[in-house]
Amino acid sequence: MTIKPLADRVLLKSVEAEETTKSGLILAASAQEKPEISEVIAVGNGTEENPMTVKAGDKVIVSKYSGTQVKLDGVEYTIISVKDVLAIVE
Image (cartoon, rainbow, N blue to C red; front, side):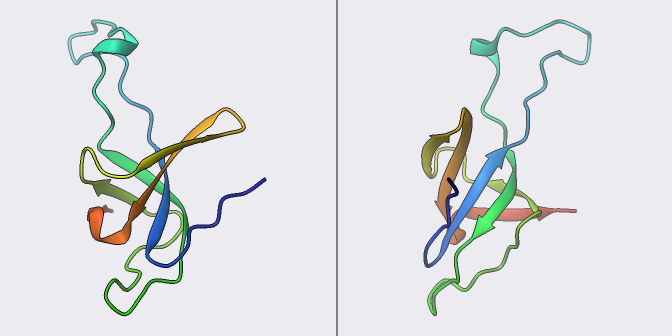
């Protein structure tokens, strides 16, 4: 089964959060923040109001609490509008 976003939607997979601090302390899963950087898995066609500005494979920074979480085959994804993408990480 696959997920294909429609219109101006983008399918994202979170990049793994750091499990240790810079000083080497291991963080419990509940203490870790939601990752800010995600990888674009698939994109819709875009709309006139919101043209598609990202492509599959891009690493992006998104609004912290945006989108809808979806779980498929044990993997968690987020579906957001392209307008919630703040930047592309190069």
